[in-house]
Structure formats: structure tokens, C-alpha cells
Image 1 (cartoon, rainbow, N blue to C red):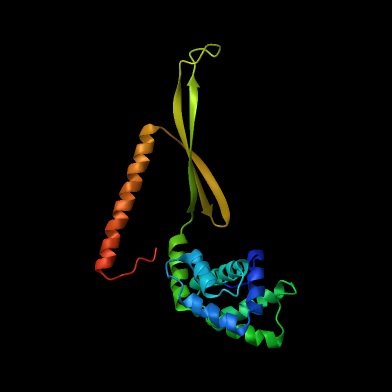
Image 2: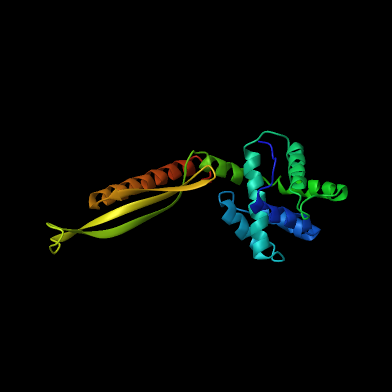
Length: 221
């Protein structure tokens, strides 16, 4: 996957990476190396925030989000790191934003620092975990159950005979770059079915974790 453009949400992160002092860069790399392999972006932000107090929380989040996106892209390509960085620099220049294009002197320094930032073993593993977890056409985002009462009438003009309790399950998910959702009607029996399915999934996950522990394999999910 060639890098042809820098998405808007990552441009400030690249600008901040350019401006890092050498002590901040070394502290950042050390913090990234200590990040939990299964912690995802939140784990990276938390670790860097603790280990590099000289950086503002907003800066940490933007830098971490930008680096994490690069690792995820890298996990999906086999091109050499040098080529990847060259494409990245070309894409930065193509934005036309004053904070991103690099002079020849800045280019050499940026190549060196981004190569170091993209060679942290813990993040290589973390990005591959993320790739495995999200390598589906649709991925879950959020869920909500809306509960209502609906009156039952014998005749529209008469007092209701009673009410029916209904539930509507809303599922939000990602499909590519799109955020979508759908609704499913549930009754009391359906709620119990969903509950049993979730409990069964938890039980199977617990059993698999026991197998991983016996095989001395880490659970990176």
C-alpha cells in the first residue's frame, strides 16, 4: 500500500514529530518500547504520557495517533522501510502545508527519527494485533438497547387494555471508513437468548486463555 497523501487528522502529528527535541525524541522512543503490546492506542498514549511529562497531553495523543496509523499501514505492506519513509516524505510535501514539507537538511534528520520511531518492536506487534482484530468487512463500534412500552387498544377511541414492553437493539459498526448502524426488535425471550450467547462467548474465551497459558503464549487481544 503506497502512501500518496497525508489524511487531515494526522498532519498535526507529523508537524509535532518534526519539532521534537532530541531529548524528547529519545524519551518518546523509550516510552514506546515500554508500551503494552496488547494495549492498543490507549495503552501507547497512557505510557507515553507518564514517561514523557514534557509533552502536553494533546501533543502525546496526536503523535501517538499518527505513529500508530503508520504502524498499522506498515503491517499491511511488505515494502522496505526506506521506501516507506520516502513515500511518506513525498506525501508530506504534496500537502502544501507550511508545517509539513521538509528542506533537504530537515529531510535527512526526519528520515533518521521516523526510522527510529517505526522500529519499536512492541509497536510492530501491537499494530499486527490491531490488523488481525480489524481485518473484517465490518467491525463492532457500539451497542444500545432502547426499552419502550406500547399501549394495546381494542378500539382507538377507548382506554388501552394494557401495554407491551418492547426492546430495540441498536448496533453501530464500521465498514471501511463509514460509520453505520442498524436496529433489531427484541422481546423478553430474545434478551435471554442474547445474554446466554454472550455468557457462552465469555466461557469459550476463558477456556482458550487457559490453553494459551498452558502453552506459554501471551493473550494480545
